[in-house]
Image (cartoon, rainbow over all chains, first blue to last red; front, side, top):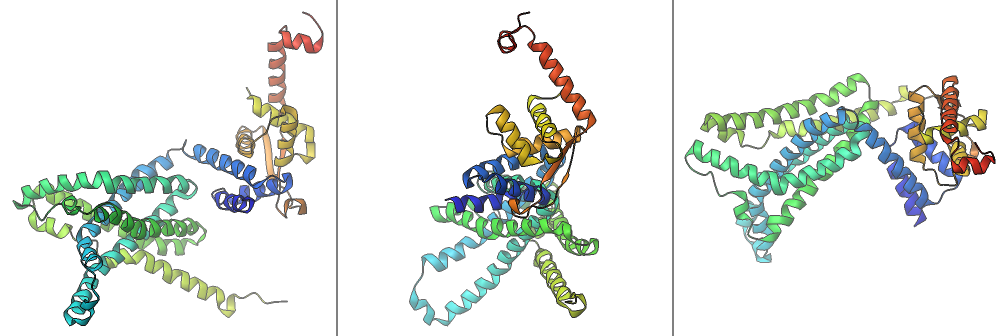
Length: 302
Length: 109
């Protein structure tokens, strides 16, 4: 129990500024507090520090300008991925039969399905990472609260905002196209699993995990040089701009009843833009590691 | 005017002199009040006092007792001493003639 408490103290104290973290850990070592007492103390300190941060206008701006809109956007995108692909998952998992392996047509269909589903999954995954990276880079010290609020926005988006938005959009689409483009998403949710658990699973695996990973990487971005930061942020900002443009185009198409534009705006964000952020990050990290390990940069051992 | 906890912190720091740092001040406050003092209250108050210019803080040297981690050293400024004195005087004036102050000093107004 004590070891778990100290482990938690370690994790929670990472939210504190590095200087304060070592001082507080030193105080704990000196006063010989128990793990539980130390955990209460560090939670209290983190709580007070977070409360103090929220007296400033910047965390509120990040909340209103990034966390809420990007969280809702990711909910919308993950709902689209669920709506468009849950039928394939149902087809393969609920109608599983070993005898299917013997048919060549099965493998051809499977390959086609993967070719159809995989880019969307990859795009959503990479977009979530990029959005997390942007949030982590901007939030910095307020990231614990922003991270929790981001998850709440995702849940709210998935179960409240997106279904209502879809209904509104369908009505507008009917006005524009003169017909509904298909059955609304919630009509397909007859089975509880595909209506409740599947969207949550998709959100957890394709949105929450990569965006938290992105936040973690974004937090470390401040230590890089200006050039490196520019290289890292350029694709992330380009992705954000593409996302904003696509949403803007969608709404403009609905408002002006522009059929061609509307159909184009429904497509998932281009994979190229979606993967740009993580790819550039991985490439930069590898380049940095290679530079650090090159013989010129090694300190001579004396 | 200072708050009650700010006064306790300043008093503890002045009493400790050159040895004033986070954990030691916390111990002083706990001894004086006979109540537990949280690290959160201590460090956020210390930041507030520093922002008001009543104390100065800096990182001390790491010690083995603290697992090689540094202390946050504290020194009360002249302005801090003035603020603490004003608070004390105000408390003395406010307490004049009240039953608990009379009982302690043994003097009737």
